[in-house]
Length: 285
Image (cartoon, rainbow, N blue to C red; front, side, top):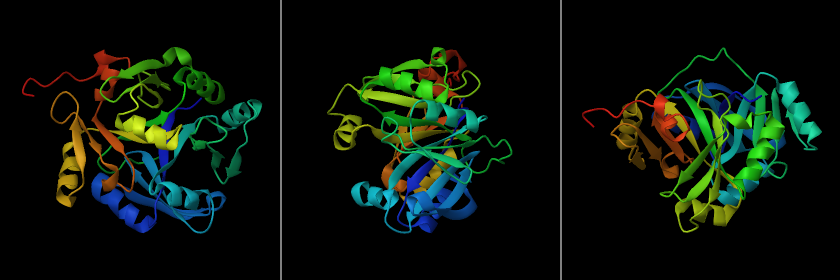
């Protein structure tokens, strides 16, 4: 019943400064500015590609202010869209999960899931893409048990487990499951990762925070504009992929605490169960 990784919620100390950063690096454009009372937050929403980034600054005590105090800036929650918001809400209710409704959003807190603060809203097909990315396609969620988490999220979100793909990384020290929503048409998914190498970066993050959101991934038709903007601003990043221009990781210090992977169009199918859909390595690479 989920069809897209719609947005991420980002805890920031200065929403205007964060909007400037997202515009400078991703070509994001401001969509609106409002309040989110349930988090005592003032929010600036920017769009890059067809995805949105909710840049949330505390307006008083609450979960957002507590997050910033304990963890600093970074990913506060994951947002998904569905063509049947009422149906997903019924599934949450049937599972005995508490959630709140505010405006067009349904919010589910981490203590009701397996550590993932979640925002749900109805699918919006009218968005005009902008900037240097195409869309958000992944939120990475570190869990204690990826098989249990797969069943849990399949149940509450109405996902088809036969579409899921296993994932394993010796380099980064985890195994897990990609809860693909609609393959092979789209890459959207929650990556459920279970730590296998505690000494690696993801393992150290898990040791500090437990089950929680770790990073996100976006797709782009051309990595170069983002890399050039990072170079111009002195932002830290790490090239990734098996050929130049295949992708990069934007360091949290360059994007208000958000660790963001950037991959060239369809490259992510290499590790997402459909390698035949990925572009071939360029002969000159």
